[in-house]
Length: 407
Ligand code: AMP
Image (tube, rainbow, N blue to C red; front, side, top):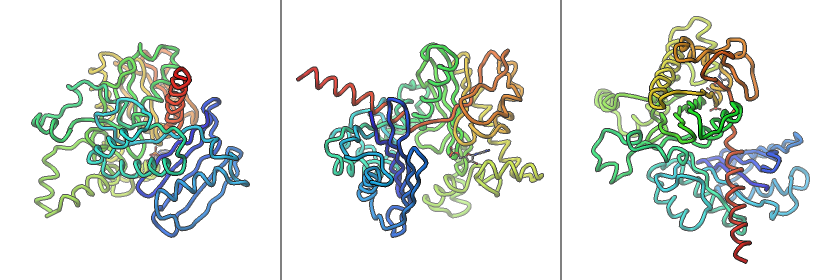
């Protein structure tokens, strides 16, 4: 099935057009700076043909029209008619407690997404705009919503409740949701495949380490705990986000520095994490470079980053009651052998033995633990677009089957 995968952000639309039968990306691209007269469309076809166009694209509706137009383009496109787009898969950030899996998008689903806007005020509105635009430009094409939060929806209450009045959970849905669900699902399933074991028979810790970072404890196919919480601010140290924090700190800083709610929010989301500690960069490559030149604060940021991952390993091994595999993914997880080494050092007593040579190999799905290691350690490049395309194809195929049974 040929599926258009869309990831609509506040000022950008990223897309991939994927043939799910052979997993080939027929074309992919993005539109950045939507809402301005200098929006940039970048489009790449499977054969390497690339174009870049700058122009006025004022809203998501027009952006989606451009995406369809470029897929249809005589010189750079891959389809002759829009009916060749068989389904659209939308990445949706927050499904709240309403979605524990991907769903066919209906009017009711759109209404429920609108009701969940409060939980993700920055992310869900552009996701909804993308869905509404597709309804207009591809009215006969089935659409599926794939949620970042869905994979974690089976967490037990002991993992998702916070130690605040229960009333606040009931009234405002304040609880742990977790994010990066499609990524954790993809890499953990792939790890099971590489191990040659059934997904529902093993225990995995999955580490998504990119600009945003999260870690998940996956017990026989179920995410039983994860580090991101009510929002993607909790948990591991990230590029510019603080991660776990004593909740009284923001209150104290607000009082001391006379900050508003918006200002303290910006501080925790944009000026903290690796950037905040190092004062140099939120980019791990830059941080490691300056650290190796002998700079103290980049080293501190690196150490806090890795130490926190290690601490979560301890917690999640206890929560899982054992461990078969650890998976690293995301820009840092896939590329930084330095981070992987720091995180995995001195864990032999837990049956985790890193192979230093294998750890240096770059690219592809790979195993980096020693043959003797009881716990296998994998590096698996994430592929969220492929997961969205496959989920979409599965749901649409089931729908087609149902319809043909009825007729
Ligand atoms: P992502 O959000 O998954 O694109 O990941 C972005 C992060 O990956 C940034 O912190 C980059 O510095 C980091 N990254 C990418 N390549 C490397 C590399 N070769 N070594 C270390 N970090 C890297």
